[in-house]
Length: 252
Image (tube, rainbow, N blue to C red; front, side, top):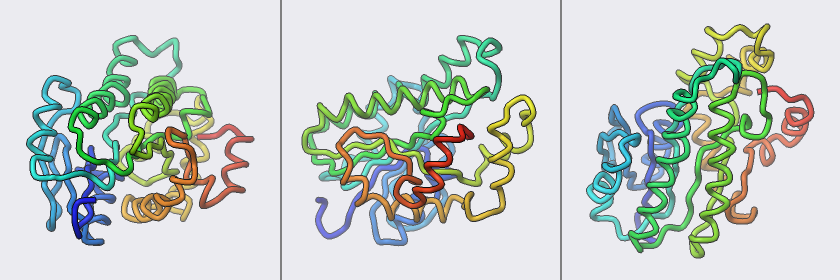
C-alpha cells in the first residue's frame, strides 16, 4: 500500500504489547509510526511522537505530524489503554469509570474519526480488546465495560470504513506491568478470576510482550476471515479448546 515498505501505526507503543508489536514489525522491515506518553526507545525505521491520547483536542495534530509523510497504512493497532482498579462495581466511582472509558473507548473514536477524514488508504485496523469484555467477571467493572464498548465501537465503524478490515482482538494473557498489579494487589479470594491469571504466570499460557506480539502478527491474515467489525479472541484461532474452557468456566 505504501510502496515496497509496509507501514503501521501503533498507539501505546512505549511498553507491553505495543512495544512488542513495534519491535516485531521493525524486525520485519516495516516502517512504524508510534504514539505514546513516554515514547518508544527502539531503533530502526520508527517515527515516534510523545502524546497523551486522553487529550482529545491534541490527537488530530499529533496524528497529522506523525503521519505527514505516509501515503497510507497497511496496519493500525489501537493498543493504548488503561486497566483501572479491580474492585466491586458498587465501590467503583463514576470518575473511575469515566477515566477508563476516556482512554479505552473515546480516544479510539477520535483516532478513527481522524483516519476517516485523512482519506488515505488503510488496509487493516485492529483494536486491542480483552476476554474481560465478554466474561464479565467479578471486579473487572470499568475495564470490562470499556472493552465491551470498544468491541461495539469497532463493529459500528466497520460500516463506515468500507475499504478497511476492522477487528477487536483479545490477545490472550500477556506478562506485562498490568499483570504485576493483577498478580500482586487484588485479593484472589474476593476476585476468583485472578486465580487463573496467577496460575498462568511463568507458563507458555502467559507469554511476554515480544512473544505475544509475534502471535498477534501471526493471526492478522486469519482475522480477515471474520466479518469486518468482529470481536475475535486469539485463543479461538490458536487454542480453541482453551477458549471453549475459558468461555465455559468464566475466568479472566
